[in-house]
Amino acid sequence: MATSGRLQVPTDAFAEAEVETELVLKTWRSFAIYRIEVACPITQRWWTLEKRFSDFYRLRHMLEQWASSATPTSAMARPLRRLLDVPFPKREMHCTQPSVVAKRARLLKQFAWALMVFRAECCMYLLECDQTQTAPSERFLRTYGRLEGFLDMPESLREMQFQRAEWPMLSHDPCSICLDEFQPGDLKEICCVVKLPCTHCFHRECVLDWLTDMHCCPLCRAATERVSGLYL
Image: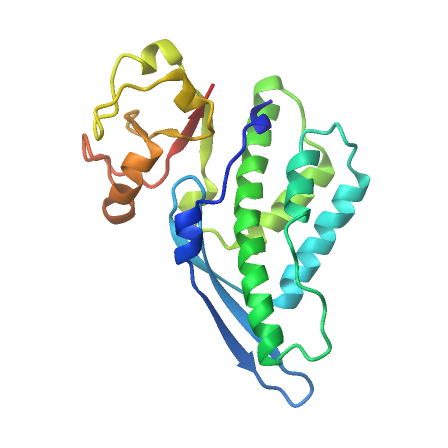
C-alpha cells in the first residue's frame, strides 16, 4: 500500500514555526484564539491556522469516533492511531489563564503539524484507491472533507498529488541542483523526490528553498504552483 511509507514532521520547520495567542474577552465567556504556523510536509509551503481550542477538540473527537469504528487491518488504522497518540490538551474550566493558554499553544502546535502529516497519508490512500479501483468508505470521505476544511490549506496545496516513479526513466538524469543521480533508496522515503508540472524532477530538499521564493521550475522556469511526490 502507498500508505506503508512514513512521512515525518520536518524537525527544523517545526522548531521555526510560531504560535501566537489572543484572548477574546466576552461578558458571557472569554476564550483564546491560537494562530499556528504550519507547513506542508512535502513542499514546506507555509500558512497560518487560526482556531480556538474547541475547534481542535471537535475535530479530534470526530477522529476518535472514526478510530473506534475502524478495523485494525484497515489501511488508515495505523496512521490514525499515530495521530491520536500525539499529546492533546485537556479541557479546562479556566481556559484563559496564562499557564493554560501556554500549555495549549505548545500541544496544539504539535497536533496541528501531526494533522498535516496525517492529511498527506490520506492523500496517498486516495491514490492507492484510485490505482486499485477501490472505492474509499463514506466514513473516510466525510472525515477527510472535514479535515480539509479544518486545515484551511491554500488551494494550490490541496491539489497535491503522488505518483509512482517510472524508475528506468528517472535514473537517466540527475537532480540538476545537487547533480547527484537519483537512487532507488530515494524513492523509499515518500516524496524524497518530487516532480514539477513541467516533468522535471528534483530532490525535495534541493528544490524547496527555490520554490518558496520563485514558484517556477529552476531548470526551465515554467510556472509551478504544485508538485507531485514520487514513490516506488
